[in-house]
Image (cartoon, rainbow, N blue to C red; front, side):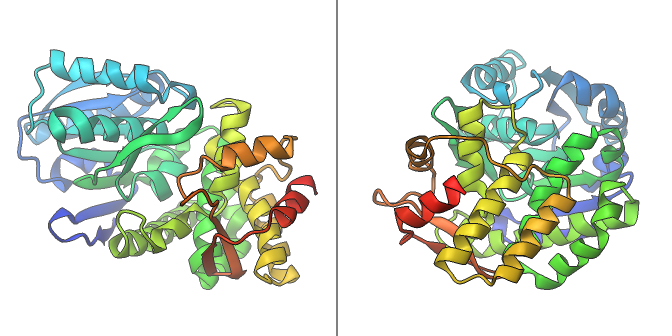
Length: 356
């Protein structure tokens, strides 16, 4: 088992990574309680709830289970209200932790419920998808979607621990593994040239789910994210770089209907658009833009954006959370592993990229 820490003073927490971590959940978290509420969905529960329940039972923690529907289209107010209602019915109090067992939808929604129930209760992230393991489970961003924009309603609320069991990835559909690789590529592109090089050499091993390769990719992704979150918890500066590809990607998800494109698929295509814009605006060398494109394609991610009118693109991106004082801000690359936020992008350059 590998361990990292997200250094946030009194709100610091560990990230445990390895095969079999789920079965050790009872010993890896300092449970100051005799009960917990597990939020998950039926598909994940069938695979992974028995191991979690047995581990917590050994630690003397009884669990109640709240099931939510599977799919991004259900990450909304209605599902959130259902979870809050169940917490009230179960008489959960401020010492009752939520355990988010599942992918990004479960983690984001359960985390948001924890952030607002009785003004904040503890929660533990137990991510079961690659995308959640390398990205959404770490950093304390919680949210639900709105029909006008993805993740526009939420709160920063840090977990007390993140438990990443690489064995959970064996049950994932291939499309979900591929979607998770987009966020892995992102970390190399924005911050770590050596990791990007490693990904170019090992993408096949990752797609074939080789244990050592997956463990290394998860560890390095979490390491980069933990460093950035520790430096900028609430995204007032450096943390915005983690949104490379996301301004375009969120627009794709909103335009096509949540769940039509998986989040990672949309981010993968978004990184291609951002790289092309980087070449025009920041002088990203063409050879490095080509490397990003080649790695996204090697991961099996979509490489062609949906056909949207320019006005539709601009409208959707104009609601992005990085917009400040009415100006769109884009995460772009000056070089591989050197990302910047730019608010001076000419609409003609943006139009050229979106029409190309």
